[in-house]
Length: 163
Ligand SMILES: [Zn+2]
View: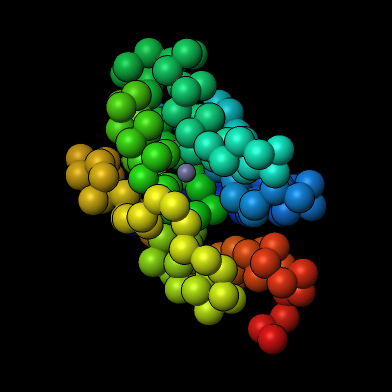
């Protein structure tokens, strides 16, 4: 279960996603938090320059491999505005990170993008559980879903209203 005290990390993910959007990148943001609640690292999507692998969850997985012990990685949680894609879920599991908490699920995001007429991505959208069955995953976090949806709508249409 997502505790109230964890919402601040998720709100930070929304801020990072907003930063990404304002910079011309896709609106995704993620925060890596230690077992004791300390924020260790954070990042946002950076694909606008042409490298489509610059997802924040991928960066955090590689950061954790470089900076944390296996025990620290296992105790850490990655909070993220959107559920990990298969690439990031695989990286998360390969480096042995702990729990994932996402705001919007892949299923929710795919439905929204389809509704907005966005072409399907080159990688199939699968839930984290299908890629990394041993990773504890929680989400969606309903109280923040609409905010994240609005960011994606703004990214694709330039407008945040439901039109
Ligand atoms: Zn990804």
